[in-house]
Length: 440
Image 1 (cartoon, one colour):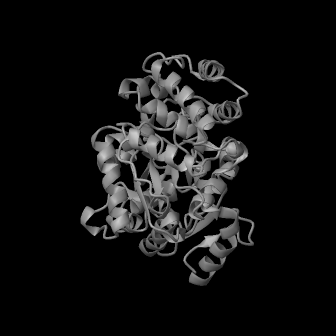
Image 2 (image 1 turned 90 degrees about the vertical axis):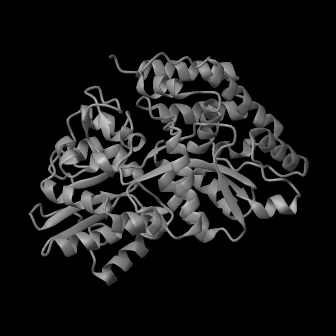
């Protein structure tokens, strides 16, 4: 899924000044965006690093620790870190990476339309030899490393390594247990019980689902409904072009019709058509909605900010759900200090950093399970293992073709407002998808 979700979920702008102050006090690294020009020296004593994780997120905490570890292992070398916004990197990456201003190491979104496009354009370093030499290929499971490799057409799943994830992510249902208790509604364990719970809340005048039509959340509800009627071959056809994708098949038709029906029944409010993901997450934190379906990227924040009893679980009645390896470390083709970049990736995959990531509410890919002691983190990781064991990660709906995210947002908004019927909605998706699928 397009990682706009992460930018909105972690409120980067508000926290940027705090991050700069904290780093300046610790002396652990240099922040190019905190008063300086941000331009790197380009010498062997500097590693220029860009990423867009908030400092108090699980990844932000782990990567700050990795920076300290890196500098301890490389005396005389400093990490020059710049926190970039998601859109900033997304919109300018091709231009920046094709210039002498490219960083040595950068976080970038995974998938055909993002890392796949950059690899196809020759803007990224081929990491295949390093992945083998340093054992990255052994540390990552098959499901997680799918997004690391891209063929000559920029399609993920095979070919050379162009990125390395050091965490994973997946979607789940978050339940406000206090609201379920207050309104005497049973927490669901099956899809039929989920529907019954939503019916019960609407009868009591409560909109059960937090939602954001202006960003990724609404389209992810709809994609999950389709996944509940799909299998791995369906996902491979849609995401990897291993077969024909028909948006009027049983799964997509069920999803579009059910989603539209949920809006009519009041499970999803039409007022959320123009709502952002941040607003939806905050409404759930404030106790305004009993249910939210979204990703593990919210987990740490909910743990620290939600002042009520809550629980989470996999979408009931579906073997598949949205998820993948996390965003990728990519090394630009024009990076000046590639060996330092490889060393930093190594450190983020070390047991020390992976264990920290897990205990902070992230999903590590190479941690020692016995070192994860936080009960909520244990549950989060246990559910991910369940998904991985059944090959249940189905990526994100906007991944297959370039520009599809914007199409999904606008067309799903029309479905919410009644401006498009389910059939017209599916027609629009088919047209945009077919136009974007590369010739193979």
